[in-house]
Length: 103
Image 1 (cartoon, rainbow, N blue to C red):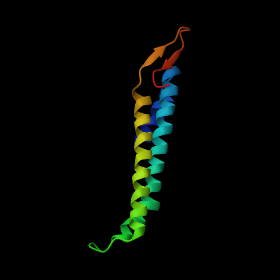
Image 2 (cartoon, rainbow, N blue to C red):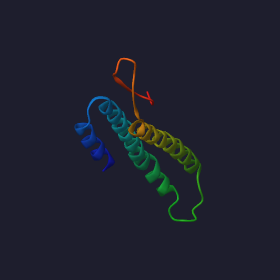
Image 3 (spheres, helix red, strand yellow):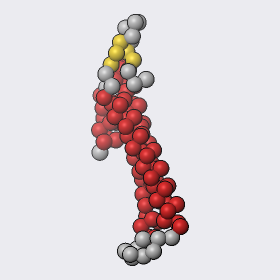
Image 4 (cartoon, helix red, strand yellow):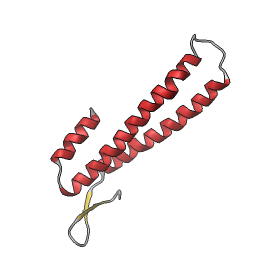
């Protein structure tokens, strides 16, 4: 939903806002892709390793758990960058054109 909202905002925005919205949509999309990849390639295999509950954890569990932690750090950072670009105020430069505080 947020990606669709971002695309709609991109279509409706103009000038300086368009650059910020485009950056926010790109970072949000990358974050979503990272979360989806983490789910498919890390979370699902991790879930299989701990089923049934109480099963002893193997070395593969520790490795997948570390991968998941790193993937989460990356996609949360990308989501933070999307929020920074989406919320950064416009600031005209000396030539009267717009720039953002985040760039």
